[in-house]
Length: 251
Image 1: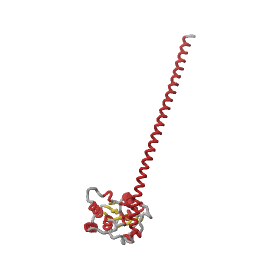
Image 2: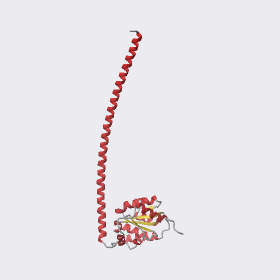
Image 3: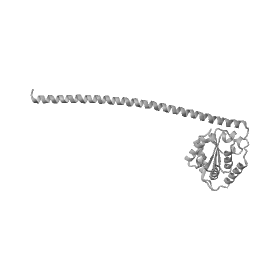
Image 4: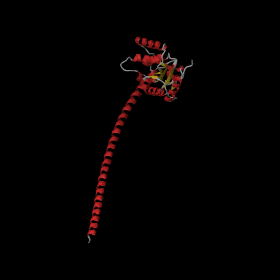
């Protein structure tokens, strides 16, 4: 065998050994990658199971809390409805002398108002009207109506009565969200309604009460043009209120 053929053989053997080494390395690399991917998949499945369990546990707690809140709210509404059903007419509301003076002061101040910083004052009873009132406020503000709303306008550390009086004075019109709790006759809503009746525009919005309930509560409110959530959505009601309070008055 010539030196040239020996060299060629050696080169071939080296290339074959190199290919074999590369193939072995590739097999080992593929095996390592496959193993790593299996471990990653296993870890992902484990994390996903943990997340599902955590979400399920959280949802169970939320559902339990919501059911408890619903039961509490329903009990309160049922109690108020029982009170309403026991009376054929609005119960007589009694005031202390200081409450009476404060109410008279508010009505006198409202009747002489000369400035407008809010388009409407939204009066409601929190116990069963908070959710609808918040939705109505949001829709009115989307339509460009400025709303005095206690949850936003009342600042802690200051007299709530005085802040409410200012809102009543500075509102051009009133919106009364009439619910079962509102018609039960509570001091704050009675005060607000007494002041709002002095406005040139007062719009009643009925929610889960009938016009007969309102008539039993007040002889004035049924004569005012208003709306009910039984017939219109909160958005539709907001649009109708906005059209009424934002239309420029004739000179």
